[in-house]
Length: 231
Image: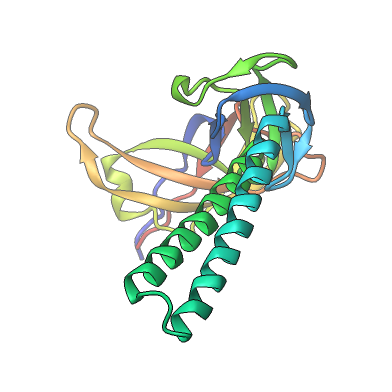
């Protein structure tokens, strides 16, 4: 029977896969803030709202244009049935009506996008925008930084020899370097099929569940202990 390889201890830092800078999707002036640094947010929860007055006027204008276009189309449809208008005229009125419907959808979309929303469940890690500030679509300026709190991941680089003994779903002991009493058990979620020729190591990702006291969080230093077994 082959003896199990010795445990491998690696220092790492916790991270999350989802971490984004939220930008605006329309240009406008920030009217109000709905979330601030450190707040837990849900997916699609508002973070900020732009001044919608001009957008609302555009929608009202689009609604009126649609109403007139619909009435015009209905009138020409009746005239066509009576043989008093041509097919080409009717098609032209229909095209204008359909275009007006699209413009109303576009106006509503602008209003919807004037509410800056969280892309997923997480925490507002930082806020870069203020009430009254003008934000421009073309500038791509970050307004908020939103970070998911889980699942937590830790990246480790193991010697090539671990290829034969570390597998996906293997259990990994995880402890905090700052808080030694905080411990949990992670699982290997990825073992790179490629060896880094410069360092002679393989990349391994460990999925780390939150501890009972929820001390573990993105950025925290941790110690990973792999217990490879003979295969």
